[in-house]
Image 1 (cartoon, rainbow, N blue to C red):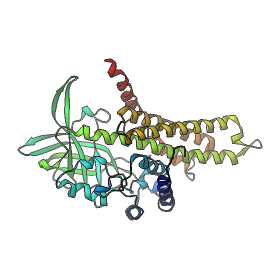
Image 2 (spheres, helix red, strand yellow):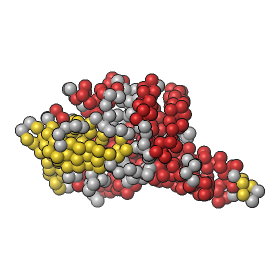
Image 3 (cartoon, rainbow, N blue to C red):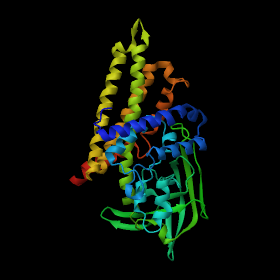
Image 4 (cartoon, one colour):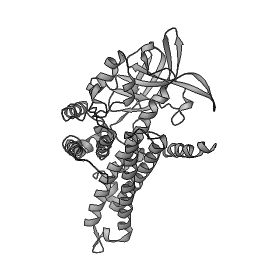
Amino acid sequence: MNITVSYENELLLKTVQTFLEQEIYPHEEVVDRAGEVPLELGQQIEARSKRAGLFASNLPEEVGGGGLNYKAMSVVEREYGKTTHALHSWIARPTEILLACNGDQIDRYLAPCVSGEKRELFALTEPEAGSDVMGMKTNATRDGDDWILNGSKHFISGPVMPDFAIVFAATGVDKTDRGLRKRVTAFLVDVGLPGFDCREGNKCVSYRGYKTFQLSFDNVRLGPNQILGEEGRGLELSGKWLSMGRIWVGATCCGKAERMMNMATEWAANRKQFGKPIGSFQATGFRIADMAIGLRTADLIVEDAVRRADESRMEDKDAAMVKVYCSEMLHKVADDTVQIFGGMGLMEEMPIQRLWRDSRLERIWDGTSEIQRHIITRSIMRPLGA
């Protein structure tokens, strides 16, 4: 590992490594082949992660969470990245915007997620509004004190059928310096409400067993206490979570890249051609050198962003840089690892092909590489009036 780890975080790292070795790694191949995590296995991981003190470790101690700061969470997420999302997602890290719950929302939504009694979905993406949030068609209109919700969401991911969803919907239009802009509000919507249909969606070849859900809303009636935060402030609520989510993607990419690099290095040292280890040939050795350079750089850019977050001075561009660089670094490491293994890299009996498939998703979810570059460009050009 390239990042600097304190004594306390070294102990945390060992706890996570031991947990993954005992509870996660043994099930990777079975879950990938079956395309699902058996419910009993998921519940076992959840229960044992609670005993290990890893469950809800990202939330503050005052709400019952583990109270880890961003630096500690980066160590945890980096290690989780070495294995499949379908399994480690059962070690819940509830969406941090649930900290905006107030009043009875705390007992109905926040506390049960911290304890594991409930699971939530973060529902933002739509069929025609993925990266273009302002293209959102899901809307909520007032009806007295209530709101009537209509629309749909897709590619909403989670390990298991949720108990409720944090749904983002347009609740009006505001005038801004850049023209009309949709006012977006976050709602807490319970599964089972009349008009709310939540079902499993398309199956992805990356992270098999990690589910996607399709949500549709047909005149779903919501009370005024179902708004999370304030009306019209939904995107502000989601912004911090999305930015940190992108940093955690970067950290997991580093973990996965390290695992693949170790596999490639060991293979290159032991696989012989023409009487020599293939790692002694420049064509292979230089690939490994590039892996090491890319991984070191990615670890440093994650560490820098995490330090900025802990000091409350991280900007959207910082998270965007992490997301685009680390995911593209992983893409190159994964592709080069397959190349070093040759035909064996694509055999189902080897884990390389699974890690290669899983790596592809990282450049898409939580904002594509193109969107990250747009965010970075905007941060540079807007102060200049462009």
